Length: 97
Image 1 (cartoon, rainbow, N blue to C red):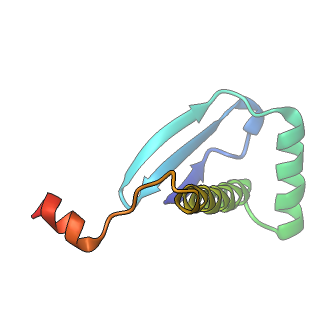
Image 2 (cartoon, helix red, strand yellow):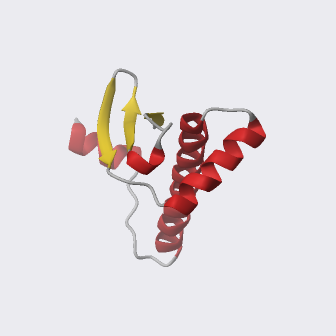
């Protein structure tokens, strides 16, 4: 999943995120970003000489990548505990045809 962030220059007034892949994206509008978060994003953007929108997009992409790992670990744990059923390609072929 790719995350793009727009309108990050004045975070105190809101933030718009476009989340999706390619030309298909869902728009999310947040009315206000907490002042401490805005200040931290501003400091990081200055330190890295990047736009705030790029910093936010990178942070969200890293966060969702970490969540993907946590989900995979959780699914593997359920599989090892016998709480999750697995399917072979032959099983799938019977269902899908």
